[in-house]
Image 1 (cartoon, one colour):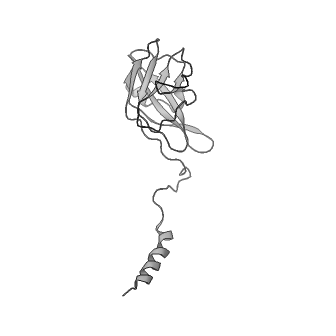
Image 2 (cartoon, one colour):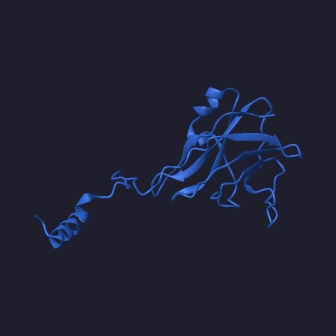
Image 3 (cartoon, helix red, strand yellow):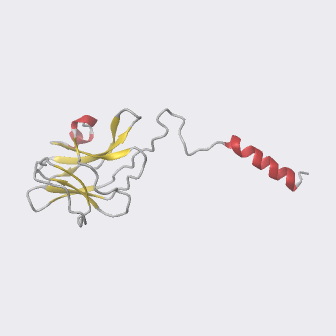
Length: 159
């Protein structure tokens, strides 16, 4: 029968050999996968542009911002090459709260006011075409030297 002391040392000595299951052994294992943005909505912003609204929590290492995509078909949007979208401006908020955030898509968009009452994460000076499909993907580093996108959000029709 093992004494309590022997059992204690057996457990302590075996811990380093158990391994940690929360990390990857791949070369890109230092990057946490970007969460999928499950749902976006698009609404007019009142000045001829649009707001893309979402609830996202992108707190992972390597998160850089968002890229906006649009297409005439849903399949075209969801299968668009990663480089074919338009990057959002610098981030004005870090999307790490469980609230609704907005991306302003307007040819006349400017930086949000300091108090940022509309929770604008970023903006881009493009026009979304009514009737087209639009979506976003998170930008992330895939290694130290390149940037890629995560999976696409849902495809929303531009009003």
